[in-house]
Image (cartoon, rainbow, N blue to C red; front, side, top):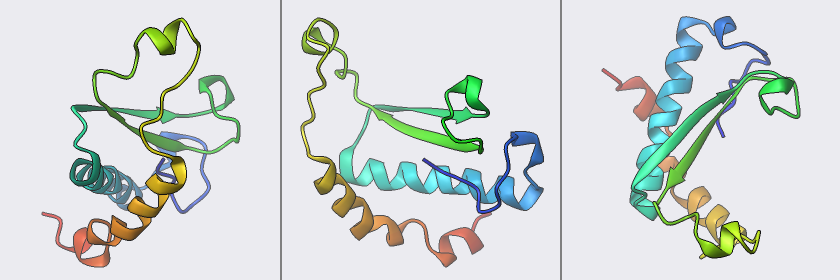
Length: 111
């Protein structure tokens, strides 16, 4: 999930600089996830407001890796999620590798 530094509630409130930085962050997260998990695609969505699914009134962007095999029999019939990796493990991998993609040079060298 990507959240702007400034607390805002609408996408239209983003400044040019914030818009560029937020979208560049989405790109960096995709590069990170590509390297660590090699997804087949992504869902990228913006939640704006409580009626759009936000539990807290703020703007945020979801970056959801997709593999093509998430929904299957166990997901639909068993109402269960099969997680191939624990959340603690995912957090450790992301934390360890995020600075390779989201660092000062990454944002400054964008052309």
